[in-house]
Amino acid sequence: MRLARGQGGVIQSLRRDGFLAEFGPNTILETSPKIAQLVRDAGLESRKLATDPQAEARYVVRYGRPIEMPGSPLGFLTTKLFTFGAKLAVFAGTVHPRRRDGVEESIGQFVVRRFNREFLDQAIDALVAGIYAGDPHKLSLPHAFPKSEGAGGQLWLDDQGPDTGRAHPEKSGEVAKDRAGKFSFDDGLQVLPDTLRHCWVRR
Image (tube, rainbow, N blue to C red; front, side, top):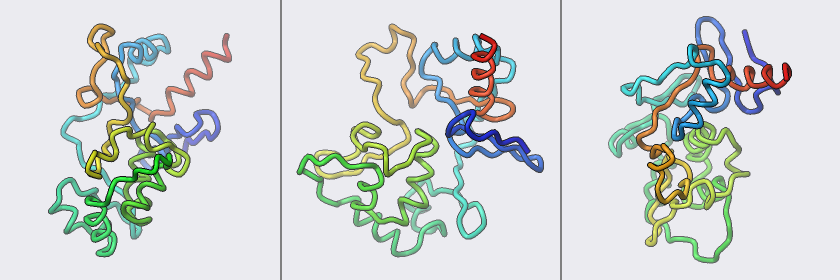
């Protein structure tokens, strides 16, 4: 078993019984050539693994077993991941009035207000961990998901994260988040902070 807590912060990889698990983010989104340069400078190109574009299914462990996250309205209705009450709360939350008092919410506060705690614990918590490796109660909603509420109160909470704000990303070689490739390493994402730590120590 390999789990070095503290060396990679929230990036922690565990290999046991032939399986590899990530305790934080599980991939890097390659939106900038600077990311590829970092991997080259760290000498990790040979250990880089691209994700399979056909592997779109995501799973959340509940009731002691992995359950696939629904990817469609019908899948959401039939999934065993959420209780009937949580499903009703989610449908009701899609037409919830937009907040207009200017108060900055955390992601956790927003999801509980619009839906319920079960949806936060079983879906959004995993989503936020995969993107930011952070606590939804400590992450600012407008900074993490600036388009989360449309003008009519519609929900826009996806896994693309914040906009970089660049007017001409193509000039710097950047790629839009929805078109960027994802990758990890042969022994998990913790390979990167471990390698960078060793490089720093050698300096």
